[in-house]
Image (cartoon, rainbow, N blue to C red):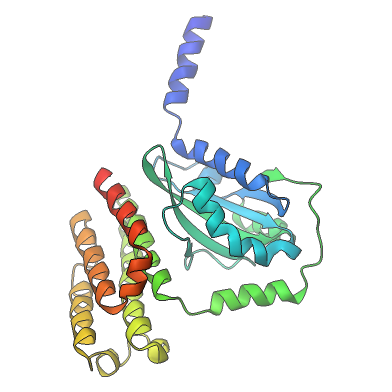
Length: 292
């Protein structure tokens, strides 16, 4: 093969290279600058070789135990300022429990929105996570300080996992789930779209309870009418929720868009301060929905 032909093929490969690889490189370079980061592990479809142009970038980040709590506390700001996240990360309820904390971020790259999943774990958990996920180590810092995590890190993780979500977190959850369901529909993954649609409706219910009757949030779907329908705002929110749960269980792009609009409408009624805090994020999200 001539050098000219090889150069042309290399240029073609570069043009057709999925943008997720550029995102992954950027994320790895950014996080590797932190002395607290000991490892990074690629898992999910990129590790299995089954990725496509809709795939999320899925990384496990090993963190020295003494810096774990601080790193979790600042990582949202880091992802926003360095990686282009348009909203706070969603504490992931889907990822298996592997000794750490998972977050789903929506980040801008080359004018498009992409999903970045970060699983933050104490460094002593990396070997077990690697074996469980069959992931690939892409970064290791031999000079990083290591220590016994002790019970404090485990307690911190357990407390984070057990903490009830805030109204802002539930709105972010609805936005992230809608993005994920959109991908399921495009891929024809009906079962996963069904499961995540149920999660979306549950997030809407939790938002209503958290905003209007936080002391009864643990009741879930039970006694919604008794606890919520005692005020005009509550009754209005329940009408929106009823419209959601009586729609098709298998979403289409059109029905998904309608469901998200209903959730944002009930959020405006039930938790206006939370919506105000996320106003710019919601606007950026809508902008990208229009582009896609």
